[in-house]
Length: 169
Ligand SMILES: CC(C)(COP(=O)(O)OP(=O)(O)OC[C@H]1O[C@@H](n2cnc3c(N)ncnc32)[C@H](O)[C@@H]1OP(=O)(O)O)[C@@H](O)C(=O)NCCC(=O)NCCS
Image 1 (cartoon, helix red, strand yellow):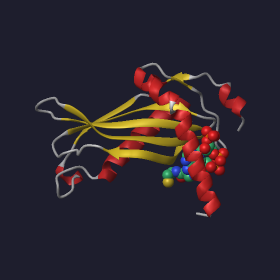
Image 2 (cartoon, helix red, strand yellow):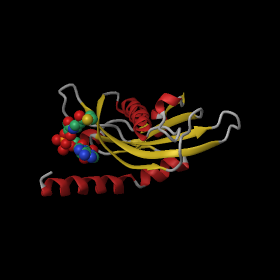
Image 3 (cartoon, rainbow, N blue to C red):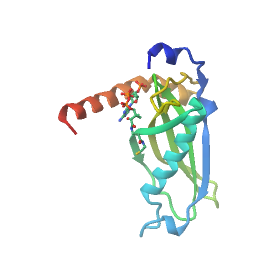
Image 4 (tube, helix red, strand yellow):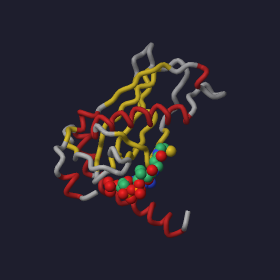
């Protein structure tokens, strides 16, 4: 896969990949503290992020990495969870998606960010091999900030991958 192949694709707006899932938290999804299990939130986030990645590439994608998952506030039983994602940065064949999970108190309407994360997907061609993806056009302040810092996160991931290979695990 060449850098030129990725550059020849027409870039797409970050907002074109924006995906939102809204659900209510039931007791069966919560722990003994009546807050949502971290794994349940991550499953929601992975699905929503994968839809964003596929809306961007219009190909099959696979998750290759997830990082910077920060659980900043609990998600309580009876609250609404709103999981939102968009493509924040791309490289040749990989797509970085920013995902945020907010809670909404249905009685007060109060909204709070509970979890944020980055998911990375690789686009696969018909032959099952990594395929070129379009670039991203950021528009909002949030999209621009995440776009401008995307290369730095990409390089950190590459370093982590190289370190792992060198250590043989
Ligand atoms: C996706 C896959 C086919 C890529 O194969 P590969 O040999 O790593 O291919 P490449 O080295 O050409 O890398 C392709 C891209 O993936 C990125 N990548 C691969 N592994 C990565 C990782 N762990 N973290 C971040 N990016 C990764 C590379 O940076 C590269 O991005 P770029 O083309 O934008 O620069 C292979 O890693 C795979 O099958 N992984 C398992 C995916 C899976 O099954 N996911 C489901 C969840 S279990």
